[in-house]
Figure 1 (cartoon, helix red, strand yellow):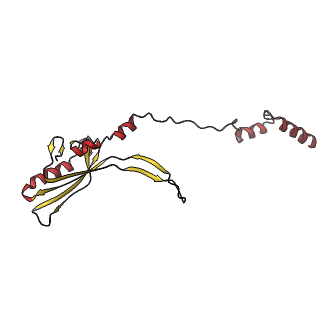
Figure 2 (figure 1 turned 180 degrees about the vertical axis):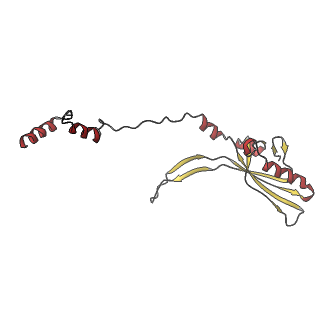
Figure 3 (figure 1 turned 45 degrees about the vertical axis):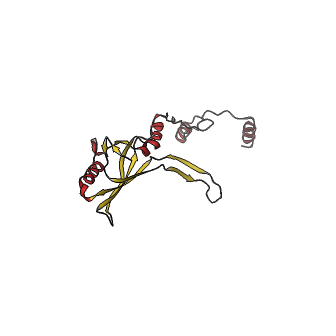
Length: 183
């Protein structure tokens, strides 16, 4: 198995690549035994790489470290095009180093056990999400007519002019006549 990042081979022995896809969801059952869950999307795929680099090949570890520390314009982590069978099977084309890169000495061999994580960049789900048209924001309004402001009503009363009466329903008209006769 080989692993190429921008055409540069990651050198080491016993190279193993494992891939994972995290599917984010939240439990919606509350205090019940319901099994409903809220789908929160697909997170970027991650490739965990483990290999062994002999002490005599220290330059290979230095090269791997420099690739992990590389930055692009603006100080962003560098994005690499990846060539690997597992990555291709998962549909991963571009990756960047993430989480940890660890190198520990092996107990019995004169070598480092190296492990690091590559996270997918510009995933298929991310590209689909950016192409999807956004939902336009709709202005909300309540049914009925707007109520006149208190200041306008007070100004009308101060001038001695009566405010324009609003249209009354049949029942309201009966109540108004009753109120007027009692007054």
